[in-house]
Image 1 (cartoon, rainbow, N blue to C red):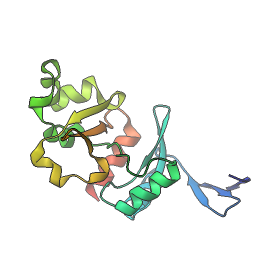
Image 2 (tube, rainbow, N blue to C red):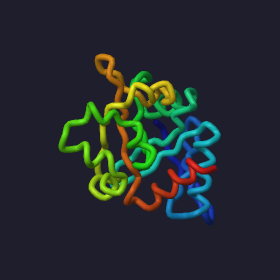
Image 3 (cartoon, rainbow, N blue to C red):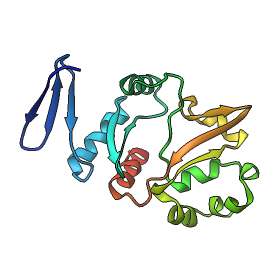
Image 4 (cartoon, rainbow, N blue to C red):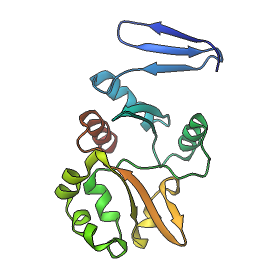
Amino acid sequence: MGTIELKKSPSITQIEYEQGLQFRVGSLDKEADLEEAVQIIKYGGFVACQMRGVFGIWVSGHDASAVQEALLAKGSNLNKPLSTMLPAHKFLPLIDLESVVQPFQEIVQNVDQFRNRLGSMCHIRAPIKHSEIRNIPRSILSNENGRYYIHNLDPYGHRPMEKMIDLLNTK
């Protein structure tokens, strides 16, 4: 990668690599950093964040070029579907209940139960209703023998991430 030089300012740190790429370092606990992260994603960029000890890249699944850039930066297969971070009230209505095993049907029908039992602690792979597929970006759909799935991590229980996802869905 080359030499890393840290440039400090009163409120931010930028990391500059030999190739001239700059990265902004901030915290989702800081309102200004959170607002900037939301704007970066909304305008076609991507943001790397740590959540519960794991780093991820956040990007709008509706922006194909931003998805490609994020996958390139990550070094991933360009055709690999991304996971989503939808709150339970947006994610659960997409699920095809008939394809969910019986013990979990009750959980995926109740937003509060889903959030309280699983929340941001479990990455869920769920079958999606055929009627919803056309409304979902291809970048987040997995297809297995004609059955479509989304991989989702509900932000519930991780306050900074909940706030970021709420801002992305409201602005």
